[in-house]
Image 1 (spheres, helix red, strand yellow):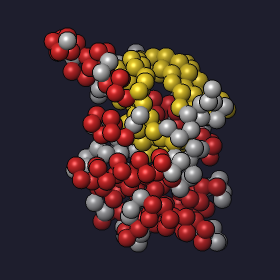
Image 2: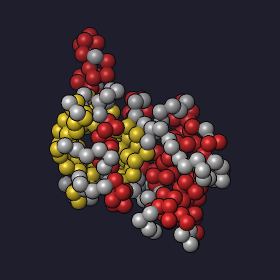
Image 3: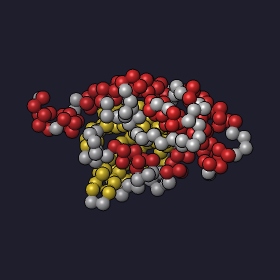
Image 4: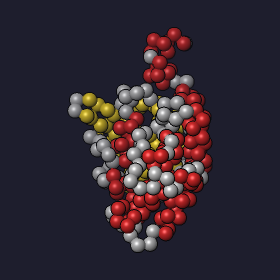
Length: 255
């Protein structure tokens, strides 16, 4: 049996009197591109934030490569190989596109990223940043200011910054949101190519057609609970999943 690269066990998160996640668990093996789906308010982003350490679970554990990381800081988790891209991209607009990636690529040089960028000898980081910008298809924007970039390029910059820390697992929070169909298709193709190159991913995405196209397996949340976990085609046909998306009465009418 393959040992999971990421293991989430019975994670529960409360915000005041609201239960955002209730005993959610799943495993992820190296090389997977896992889709994490569910209707609005299902708890998807909260789950990614609990994995990365932004949100502390009230119950449950998170393991990365067999190590319990539940109590570690976000920075410590990043150093161990977790990276998260955000739906709303917020690059440092006071520096160039390539310097945004250099900033992330310098994470291993010192405990302070800002000192890493200012450190003497950043040739290796600049080379790595250039490679990553080419990998995600925005090398031509290297010297541009992020403020001048279209949304599609900004989304790719977010991916490049995350890749710069050499993650074991890349968590993607709606990377296709806000993109037109052409940009979404191109970015989806880039993610598939990165996954084929060995990057393990969890993808939150509301475009079910695109999820079905790129993800072999899905985990589905609804109202903070996991309601399905399995192969994409079978999962999307699960009556509980259909009901979560279109309502129980409408789902019943289809049967």
